[in-house]
Image (cartoon, rainbow, N blue to C red):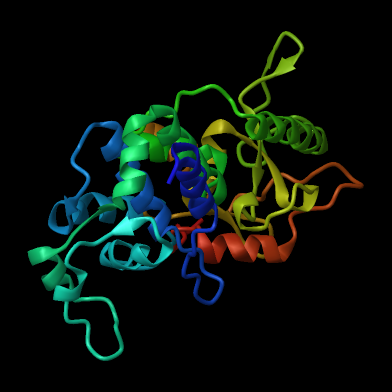
Length: 302
């Protein structure tokens, strides 16, 4: 296959990646494995990695950036094969039974190896820019923008690259949404009240999607919160959420220094800042989605 065709095929398959959502629950297992594998390519690591070596890092990624439910790295390591991106050599050696289900974790630890299919692996190693484009394709499709840098840092990916036309268009859309949300909330963080200006410019404030844009969340005021950078990240990581009465929920899993207590623990049960009259509050079904899909329950008592 010609080089340009291989490049296009790789990006097309990343866009068409099938994720096993169950009962509407987001499933970033395959995307996180792909980002882990892209970081290995960028670092010059061998094409194949033993499951026994990858299991720990993948579990950390799933715990940190996956949904709030138990999960196992063996699922994406085995099932990514079906998307035409991932190779598990000697797959016939795994006795998965008559239903062709995934092999047990013991078998994978003993003999499981995986990596990009050879054609895509060569293309990625020959073109560092393709690695970054592939990483952005995965991140943009499956994760909120506030999580891109933390995920890249966790796997060791360098995302620095010139912006594509699609990225420029996305930034323009994001700026318009941010402007409408900040005006609706009077340039004030709905969690802590942060309201700072450098000259005439508000800084440290962002427009957060409650129902993630990557999962069908609209760029509408009933899905947007004005939050400071800290509390935007806390919302997207599942440290914060919103209850049915528009009060802030704080995860019991948050711990740290005195500053953490001041910045997050003290928010438990606090009423969420509301938009100016004439602007809609967060839609209840958007808040429901966030509590089910992102928030790290249980919530801290107020």
